[in-house]
Length: 288
Image (spheres, rainbow, N blue to C red):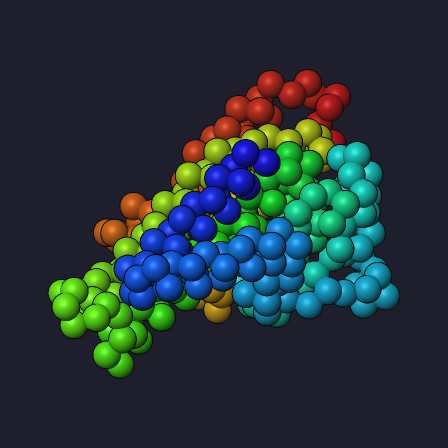
């Protein structure tokens, strides 16, 4: 919860500062109120915002009984309540978890994931997402996604304010230029936040997933497969929510310089190596 409060406080301070920069004390107060509304919304409804970012729809057991049965079986092994299950129509194989706590969690798979993976690898991926829920990673990640989206929105507002003649008054130089700078800086701030909270979480979720399934290597194989797909099949998703996915969904669009510096996921090879190390220490009787 400390990270959650820190993110909310950071959003409030950033938006208030931007409001003060653009509109003086009145702008600061307006953005402070806006930040309060955003913080309230992020805590209670951020999972729905993330699902919209992925164009995902909640499904019923009747719509996909096999997926529901898989999630149900694995969540029991993880000692978790049954999460909501959703499917994103994206063709890129990927998955994520969202929600504010284990009692209000969502596991989402893309349509591409359900088509591309054999059952044992699919179970490894779902176990990974359940591990995020078990360790309560998803609240911080979900709020970071909505916060990053808010920061990006403010950056765009600053840009249009500069284009249309808004921003600071004429006796305060640099308003328009400052707005354009914020358009560049805001996404970088958002990516730094995402990177800071998500990279180590992936290693922890991988290890816990191996415990849930008892089989580290199907997840390792799935990570390699998903990483290759992500480099070939673009995903139509708001970059603010990219860090929630099991592998970077924007790999196909990612350049080789600045964007690589802000990758929100550890290298897949490092994750596979750690899973291989776990597999090497598991007694034969434990491996199924």
